[in-house]
Image 1 (cartoon, rainbow, N blue to C red):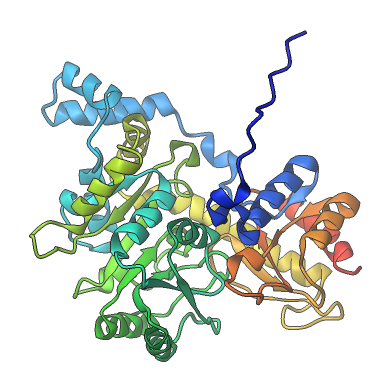
Image 2 (cartoon, one colour; image 1 turned 90 degrees about the vertical axis):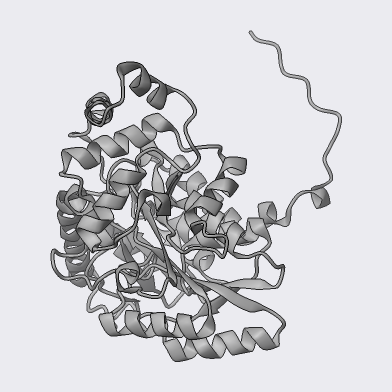
Length: 432
């Protein structure tokens, strides 16, 4: 028997800790993880995780070898390749050239490698942008509610004020953005950035039309703010159906694009990127300034993880779109299956005997559902314990209390039979 570790005699006063660790919305995500661990046999519509089957064709060693061969083909010696992969790397990244070429090929976004920064997932990219683009304590970030909790958590950790825009199902209205900007200005704060996920946002599933994208770009230019475009779910659009990305439409320099290899490749590599080709009055790209901040945060993004992402890109013709093609097809199939199961077992999405409503997005991982009863932790616990089904309460996706009666369903990690059985259980749980 091992000895019991001594208990520290010093108790840190809670008031000395940053308030974010006691934030109810952040703690609600911790509670969700605890519920998932406590009921591992439950069918879970909670995680927005990739489907396990999509990892079967991924050989990490092969990917690293493919990227190493690419380096040798471009003149690097064997010793140079080994050093590039095994040593600390530059803060700006290693596969910048591949990402720049991929967005040029896929999206007609013409940027150089110096405009690309490789990050530890999209989350670090968001954190860096919020830190670097909000210099004054009165700078604010605008979001479309409901919004990605990771953005809200990053802002909370940084002490940045966040203001919310509504979503009428088509995304934020530019007139509402203008009104929010003026109202925020009168309160002594200035909106510097607007965070948007234009294609199948988490959790709403909203996709912005071409007209709405153009109108928001024009409004951002009038208000002198930058748009942070999150493209995490863009690859799930049916081929040829998605409007151009905000970055592709931007001819002024108002958009910084954030991308990730987590959903489209493997989350275990924890590799994301951002495209920030804006120039400061020093002549330096915004990406280079962000790299300076990154050096103080994570030093660099793991070279071997970047090599995995780079190798996967090279295996798919240097195209992010091609890398995500088969995966997007699987997720669209899962989404169609979930929507059909909801109609079959609960009723029409716009209203039914159970008083439950939901949206029907054309892509992404998520369906947003509104209940006649609070979708709180107590209901989640009963759903897990008595019916064996899990979902995500949406309170953490809002600044206020608007998410009290809403939940999010994710179908990305499930198979069709699991989706069918999960919806049957969900229908029973929601009839309480």
